[in-house]
Amino acid sequence: MKANTGMKIKAYRGDCIGIIIQATTWTGTIIKVNKKSIRVHLDGIEAKYGKRVTYKGSMDQEVRYTFWKTTSDGREIYKSESRIYGIIEL
Image (tube, rainbow, N blue to C red; front, side):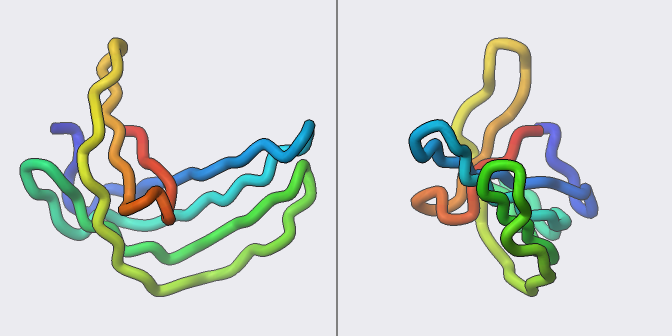
């Protein structure tokens, strides 16, 4: 497992609407590591529509990300429930 307590992370979720990409990025810190999940305290959010930033602010949310898979190049991917808060690659 690459996840460690205190590690800074970025979670990402994006959708393609025609030729424009709508993306949301969350920033936070890992506060708890379990065998198949991590708990993250999210403290920032940035939403983009194309290249234009539509929202940038702070938040105070604790989210659980579950282990999804390990890629062929060794990255671990975690996802939130229903991918509401995106995915994390470590």
